[in-house]
Image 1 (cartoon, chains in turn brown, cyan):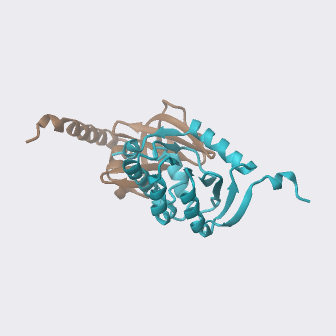
Image 2: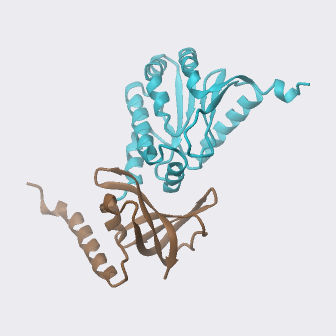
Image 3: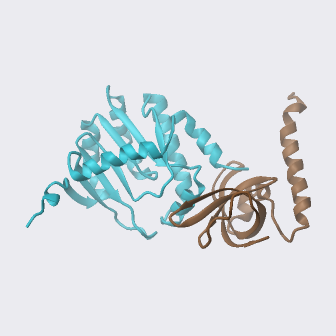
Amino acid sequence: MPSPVFHLPRIAHRAALAGAIILLAGCASVTPIGELLQNSSKYNGKEVRIKGEVKESAGLLGRGAYQLKDGTGTLTVISETSAPPPTGSMIGVKGVFQALLTLGSKSLAVLQEHSRFQ
Amino acid sequence: MTSPVELSSGIVRVAPFTAFVPRFEELLASSTRVVLYFIHSRRWRENHDAAIKTFLAREGTTLEVFLPDLENHELMYSLGKHFDDGPQIPGLITDAYRYFARLAREYQKPADIWLFGTYPTFSFYRFDERAILALYSNTAAKKDLPAFEVTTDSALGRFLDTDIEDLKQECRQRTPDDLEIVIDNALHG
């Protein structure tokens, strides 16, 4: 029988996710990134709002891409109209969640940015 | 009047990419060095699987492969938008990773895979003295893609060789065994 110790990281991760969901419930319909990634088929193609810290900015073909991190995960945001926000800033983004590849319970996904909010 | 540039361009044949199937078989059978750069080229890999394996089984042959960086989500998004099979592209790239990882386990070639993070403007298949360059369309509409066979000692061939050296500077180098880690890193959840 496996030791309960081996389940601790998963339990801790779920607790963090549950905590983030409770915290973010106070913000109008902000979805935790971990929730999007763990249920990618449910949210694929849907407009969602996420909020977090800008981790990395990059650019390709005139697009502004950056990574947004909240307490539950990290998601690449693709902006076709605006330059990426400064690294380290806290922002909210409304956009369409796109799951590009799903293997098992994991997804390669991006958020196509429509607008930003504070 | 024919300019010196045209004389040394090195183009020996222009045809739809699909017309090069028999030529690829000849080139794989006669070459010792092959360098590949494409998005996933599933059809090409399927069409020439036996010839690729025969090439790899021959002593002294080398294979170098450039593939898109699956961890570059922006590149995956861009590729998905620009091809008629866009939604399948990350999955097809994953398939290409695993194809070359299987070859490496069986033939110990390729020793390394280079992962590019910039949007590709053309694909190429370089052999000893010839190379096939194929254009990508600027739109998502499916169409026959033109390809060029060029000599490698020509202006186009030298451009290609310089590009290969530059790509090796810019791309992330990974062993075939590490490709599963790249796939895992590209996925969240």
